[in-house]
Each structure stands twice: as structure tokens, then as C-alpha cells.
Image 1 (tube, one colour):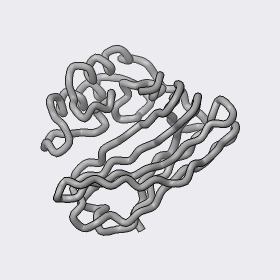
Image 2 (cartoon, rainbow, N blue to C red):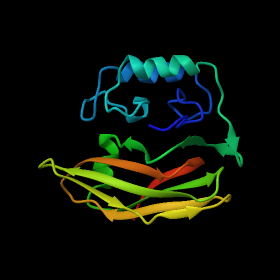
Image 3 (cartoon, one colour):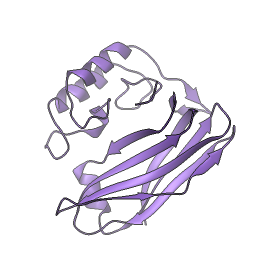
Image 4 (cartoon, rainbow, N blue to C red):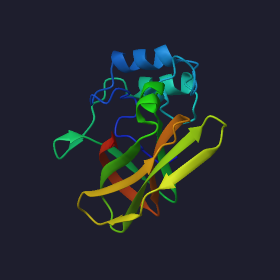
Length: 183
């Protein structure tokens, strides 16, 4: 994983402050993994597909911290070397609403360094267990906000969906307004 992948890692509900609400969200999902009834992908702070003491510890470390806002909204900051992925599994309710529809996953990024590039990806798993990843085009950015996106139609037998924000090279960037839209 990259360094400082989220401005305040422990801010589970993205309200720009790490507080007791965030601890409660992780506690309610404790011991779960994708497919469990209490699974909450937002509570998987280290991205290992299992919510455990590591995730609670990450919230505890950030307790009381507030996030920086860039251009008037809450944003994540990520930086590091080499290839980096920030992933998010969608909950079962979202999977059921999105399958058998064309969907677009997009996010905006504003690099702190020149020559950063980003790519949006969607991975879906169908009922037989096979996995497919659809990648958007690489978006090369300088110092302004840029949009990366990918569109695909999900099969009717989709059982799990993960969205991926992908960076390569030496990257330093703010990420904002990640969204999924069905058409």
C-alpha cells in the first residue's frame, strides 16, 4: 500500500473527523469479510478484505483528527512510489441495484507532482466465481483536477463489485468525488 492513502485514515464515514461514530462502524463490522451479513467495506481501512483489530487500531490512531478539505470538499491524499491501488468493495444492496446495468465509476484527482497518471477500474465477480476487471484509459495530469473513469455493463449474475483507483510512478495526489452511476 501507499503512504497516507487517506488524509485521515480513521474517518470511516467520510465526515471529515475521526470520532466515536467511526469506532462504532468498525466495531459493528468486526470479524467480517466480503459476503458476511455485517460486512462494511468502508470499515476495511487497510484493504485486506477482513475487519479486525488492525482496522480498529487505525481508527484509534486518528481519533480526534480532522481532514483537510481541498477546493471546499472532503478529499483523500495519497502518495508513494511504484504501482498503487485504492480499492473499495460495494455492499450487497449496491451490487443488486447495479447488476445487469451499464455503470460508470469515476473520480477526480489533483496531483501535487507533475506527470502523475491515474486509472479507474471495476472488478466484478459472477456466481461461478470468475472475476473480470475492466480498466479505463490512463489519465495523465499536471497540477489541475482531472477525471478518470471507466464504464461497463455488469452481468445479471454479478455477486460482488469492487472499484479501484490505480496510480503508477511516483505519485502525490488528492482524490475527490469518487462516484458510481448507473445508466
